[in-house]
Amino acid sequence: MREKGLPAEAVLEELKRKLHGDFTFESGRILGSMCTYPHRLARQVYAEFLEKNLGDPGLFPATAEIEREVIQTLGELLSNPHASGNIVTGGTEANVLALWAFKNLRMKNDGEIVVPVSAHCSFDKAASLLGFKIVRVGLNNGFQVDVEAARKAITPKTIALVGIAGTTGLGVVDPIKELSDLALEHNLLLHVDAAFGGFVLPFLKELGYKIPEFDFSLPGVSSITIDPHKMGLAPIPAGGILFRNEELRKAIAWKVSYLAGGEIEQSTFVGTRSGASVIAVWALLHHLGREGYRKIVERCMRVTWKLAEGVKQVDGLDIITKPVTNVVGIKSEDFDIKLIAEKLREKGWAVALFPRYIRIVLMPHIHESHVERFLEDLKKIVKELKG
Ligand SMILES: Cc1ncc(COP(=O)(O)O)c(C=O)c1O
Image (tube, rainbow, N blue to C red; front, side):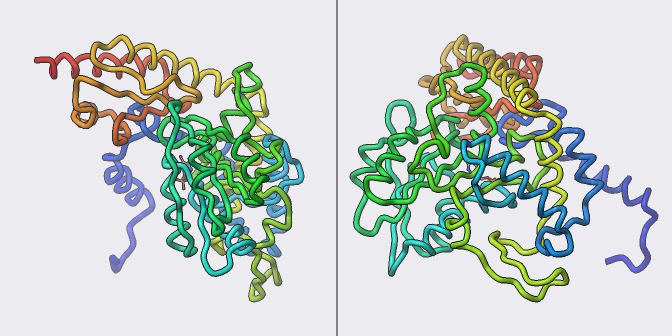
């Protein structure tokens, strides 16, 4: 650390210079991320209420009330206004919390959780932390979990199933209704990871898309992850974990007694946590409303179709599957997809590479003009590879 501090302006200048190498959302070059430029109002609110600490809610009871309202609103969005939960650091923490509750409620000496191969790596982290076994099951032709394979994977040690509503790779939705029936039939808990899809699917449904049931309207669903810092346009960190009822949430409730605001019951992984994030989510839910989110999702889907159609017209390339949400997987029978991804990166496009495809997420910061430029570069790369 330097002995004598620098003036604030000098520090800001230095930071600008140092951070110059980062990608920016405004550039339209970030094509492979599930995060986006936070909404203007959320940035303002976040900065204004930065000191609020929900790790000590006795000091910030009004902020804690705002969190309850946010959870209630998200619960309503997911067909259960009585859901109980928290705004947490992200989808990873939310998924870990759900499985932690399941473990505390059901696991005796050992336990197994049946998870699709398409599930996010946070479930492996949860298994490593919590000491249960993850049993991965395959997918059907639509890249959704194969429900019969899930049924066959159930053993006397199985405590829960996991379904994904908006997969990390392709944004597709597992047959959650069938998983819910399976969970009820075998007395298992069921977690739905809608970290990405939670802020997309309800609005697609309102826009008239045929979206299968995936939320608490299905009686077998015990908990849902829904992340405001993905399609909710909230600043990081803002993940969401919702339990069907208080009893489930209480399975991970800890008494913390040393706090300045007095003893509390905490059901998050972390102690000190951002109240500003939660207030920013509240602000967005009220400012955008369903109509605002519908418009955002509608625009993202328009851009998604434009990309999907454009890719299909490039000789040698195709899409993996028809987009269900605003995610497109680009594959090739003729060329090495890893090489294409490398060449795209050389041209400044931040794309995500999966084992058989390039994943593009058409987040709100991506406009039609960005897609047009991307398609031009993609065509040039394919032409080069053809030689
Ligand atoms: C379906 C799904 N679940 C969970 C996560 C993890 O979320 P986070 O990165 O906020 O921890 C992701 C990340 O992309 C995801 O796609």
